[in-house]
Image (cartoon, rainbow over all chains, first blue to last red; front, side):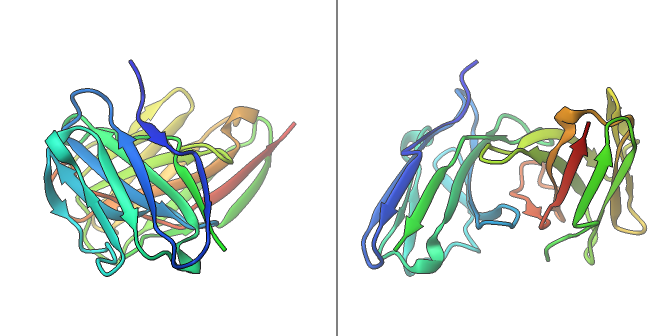
Length: 113
Length: 112
């Protein structure tokens, strides 16, 4: 079974530029999450989708971050404009059923200069 | 509210035991444990649910004390492959597929 796919794996941008990350969850997984992991910390939930609807985006900085999940499959997370403090690894995860493990993708490491 | 993990770091010899604790100030419905190796994605270890029993597989087990809002991860006869950072993720709601709130992690180093 293929895992969660993410691209790009690495991205370096300058502050105030825009960037987008892509995630393709495991086939059939209805729930998709985006987490932000700053160096030395645990992942922080940014947004959760159930199919193509948003379940929880309470920690998403909506003035600069946006996310969508068209057709309930793959998802895109965008940052516009980026700030220095956005430097982090952005992890996408998906889960099949309730009370089950979340499968994480390899992440996108973003460096904002 | 972010759960608090302790200790922050542990250094062990191969074959020794370790306990990692995860405490929350809020009532919990579930606790998830993950291990992350440097530069890799977190990997699921186990999930403990409110009212559930202690879980384990191989030489890694965990308990969940609902009254204390605390979970502990037990690693017995540690192996070199156990090295990494361990995170607990908590969910206060019984939504089942809720996004998790993770602790800051416990760094575990196993030496030969």
